[in-house]
Image 1: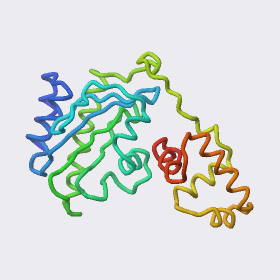
Image 2 (image 1 turned 60 degrees about the horizontal axis):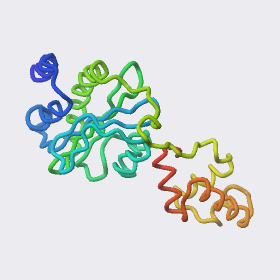
Image 3 (image 1 turned 60 degrees about the vertical axis):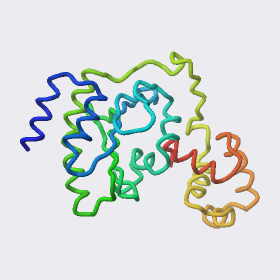
Image 4 (image 1 turned 90 degrees about the horizontal axis):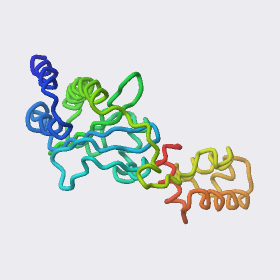
Length: 228
């Protein structure tokens, strides 16, 4: 507890997000074998701002990207954790944990922490408890020093161009969910009560709406957009 209180006091020195990330890896989370930290902010227009990092080969700090690009960069598993579709904050490798940063009762962004070795079950709960404490302090600090951006992605020279979930009918969403679950056209026809021909026609409409060419890509897009 004394170490955690020291962290809160250290924030009074107004460190940068890069310095916070470095301190977490080299000091505060060092006993757990942390090797990387990345802090990011989710804006109101779904764009994502990389605020700070430490331990990565590529420097993303300062980059502002569409939410779709961020979801592609972090991969399906981290995206599922962020969307609340995983039972916990850990990846299946047990070497990476995604912790929410919250401000004013909603998600501000995430703290992504990587470790040199897989963590055992008894370690994971202790690590999450510590990370959540640091995340609370970091959330408050960053929400004051780096408030969420209300600008649109067009201001960044980026056309959003992302399909809306409303572009698919309820039937198509049910079929898309089946794709994510790995069901075949015959499985979906039986489950949903439509003919195989209807499933095929609707599948092609889904491909067109998502600008993809096969079921795997459609399922991946659905997860990236947080629709499923």
